[in-house]
Image (cartoon, rainbow, N blue to C red; front, side):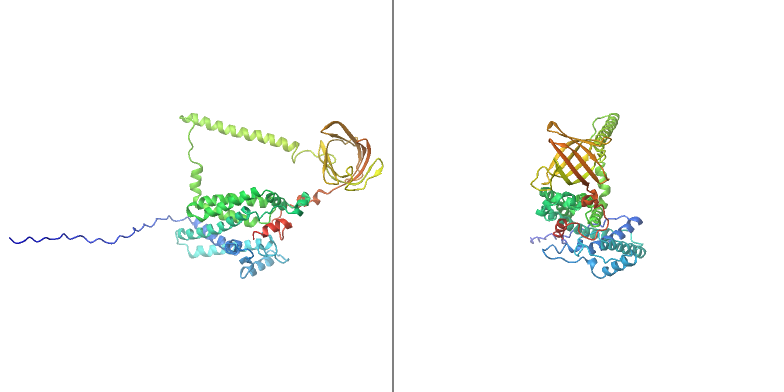
Length: 459
């Protein structure tokens, strides 16, 4: 017998494994309005970030490393100067912001720069739209530009946040600030001092800002970071608007950058906000009645607290009736038992000022700046003033008064068994910076030394 041949089975050749190719997503065509809006905002935001501290602060956080904003250099600088002179007819020299000698982000240079960037972005959008009409969407470009915006906004949020976590933006009040009369503060000085005097709160706000910036770095948490950044920048913008801080324009752009990042997620966020909640009852009719009852209860709460707040406003708040002698009166001359009392700091019976702020009370200020409060009752027809003490029901003092002029007051009467004569001069309320400062869209310089010092430390 011939031996049988052993035939080995032929193994099929295996091809090397390769990663599966992901099919390209079918991205829908953008509407014309969406495409135009993207072109404009990409050009404008790109220019604004590249022209201001947003780009320079990403690389100049080192102590002592201060670089001028690109807008103050060629080629934007001559364009801004020409526009200010020929379009807005600004004759005064323009001061630079942030890195320059102004200390204000709302100076004329900043506003003219913004106008120039808007014009450039508009012209670029028109040209881009004419040359690229056939493109269906900018999904790929939007992806990369969104990355750019994420990091530029994150840089500002982290920077300003850490300047508060380590409290240097709003430092603790200096010794001279502690001695400064409150009325001489600017509104911005009040904000800076109040924040600086509460370091824990400043650190808390800094943590919120820094958290928003850090969440922007990670793609999966970028939407949450944009939400936190939007809330923080709106808060900052409102503080700037109400306390007249000269960073209104810059803070507003941080809000816009946050909104740009959130725009693609708005439908998803709206659906989340309007998602169906657990029903209280099984029946449809019962749930409708419950909904109406909740709305009625909410309206009742609004009505009750509006009524209460309006009552307090009308009696003790800004809408209260003012006393007949309303104002701060400087005691120019004072005599007790016909003996002149010069304004000596050692004299505890010599008044420095008389303050009438509420109809039923007043206060004298001593030369050591302490106050002596009294209940007050003014009889305008008889021109009398009666004083009482809250802690002594039997104590009384009575005066007659004369008004030789609107800003002059003479008081004569008995107080603590002594005959008292005072000649007073009305202080102009608008002489206090806190009252007269007002609101300014354009500011060419810092408001006061401490607030400017705190802002300079963050630049």
